[in-house]
Image 1 (cartoon, rainbow, N blue to C red):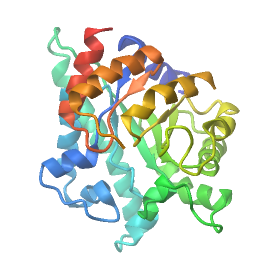
Image 2: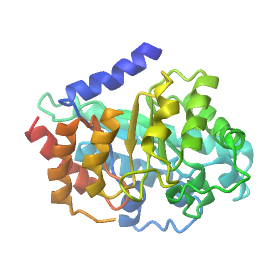
Image 3: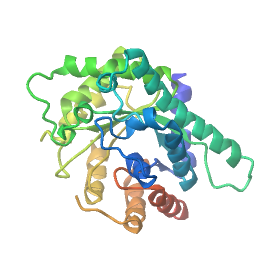
Image 4: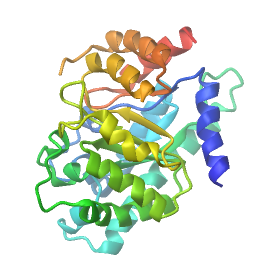
Length: 302
């Protein structure tokens, strides 16, 4: 299973011309459909309120050309669901639902697309999103990396463990740790993957506010130290950071907020790919239109 899953990711990147495309801003697209996400669960509240809308957004990103769907579980946590009065079992069921909805959307879309021999699409993979501890706190600490003196390695592992177990059991193709702001949480993620003997590909994405370091102020060299010692992490990257930081960060990661419009995003994506980026997608404020431009730009020049 381990080699098969990892081969799926590598084959996808290879078949995509060396750079696969993830989807874009999930909450942004929900809002375009009139969704209200002013909630501590953010977009994950729609796992409760309207699962069909989540599936619709996944389908829209597939239509736009996404090779990887990221589930709606970024801010979905068992403590977060408990704060809404839900039981542990109900919370676990919602985490499973996040993967199920993405898989169903992928399978439905691919079943239709493959009947057309001339279609431009590839069978997408589903990445289960695991947001940072700061995302659960919903206080902006994923952009500062400051969790306070009471948060240690054990507490972070305890926080992430059951969610990781449930998401893995739900059967995604990949795991996506997102918006990690400090070395401690990166180490917690790596150690959990080892302790739980996770055998599906994983990536860890950091964020940055200065384009040079993690939000905590720690260098990415230090943050990557634990990752480089593990065989459980298949990719590292950046999310939720201004696009003008990306070129230098790709170079930094390969050796070891200004808002762009969609056309700029497509232009810059080809440069990021040429610098060595293997997976590129959107984050906040991007939409299926952004991913369509990205898809067209990368495929025209691959």
